[in-house]
Image (cartoon, rainbow, N blue to C red; front, side, top):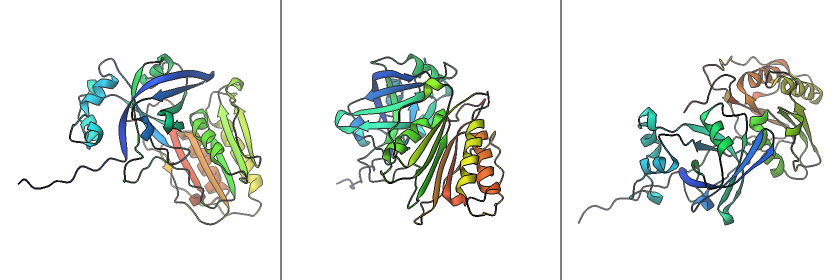
Amino acid sequence: MPPLTEAPARPAYRPYLATVARATRIAPHFIRITLTGDDLGSVGCTGPDQRIKLVVPTPTSSAHDFMASVADESGPDGLAPDWYTRWRELPDVLRNPLRTYTIRATRPEQAEVDVDFVAHGDTGPASAWVESARVGAQVVIIAPDTRSELAGGGVEWHPGAATTLLMAGDETAVPAISAILESLPASATGAAFLEVPSAADVLSLQHPAGVRVHWLVRTGTTPGAQLGDSVRGWATRFLTAHHRGVEVSDVDVDSEILWEVPAERTDPGLYAWIAGEAGAIKLIRRCLVTELGVDRTRVAFMGYWRTGRSEAN
């Protein structure tokens, strides 16, 4: 009798084959794509800023080609437990680009997932796909599986017992901040600053009365400049007591990822979540921590993108 072997564990994240059910331009620079699929009812969303990956279809590798490359009948849902390694080992011409986005909403009972994309022309493979996506188009997303017993990830919103909340970001962070605002209790207080390319990109958002939402329409060519000024002004007014600044290590945002996320705290006080163009986030980090003395364990800094550079796979 052959020895018994344990079934492979269901991965925390897995590829899902999805179909575009709806594609709606909700503002000049935002497109909401609703995805559906047989398995999408198990897509997990463990926090309002839940990140997922879009497997961008290419002329040499479609959504079905990707799923075939990671298939394994012996694995959970017919997928190889080492699907990521298999993807990494594909020849360059067959290895689809992966791009990071935020889940805007899930409807498990309808097996639907909404993802809001920033529309800025066909400047890259993901942007080109988003601009051309039509109902019926197929794509793969890599997302948490609610059926997995393994710990998930991809969530950085950890306010804990914070009593004052600060959220700030450019258009790439608008989907996450929108979902965060909707998730807050009615008693929440604080402020949100959202910098967008045009006045027509200002969206109607649900949020507690105690959280003031400030839309900043970009007037210059430098993403994040107005965001930094607004955060500085708000933080200066909020910090009534003197705080001694702390030097922070320099981050070369052209060669490193700026991503500093503190553990959840159990004490009251300020909690800030700040994301967007890495150069702008670096300046805000220096302002809050070094100049104004905000405890760095109270702020999540995330460089979502860098001017002139595409996301690394």
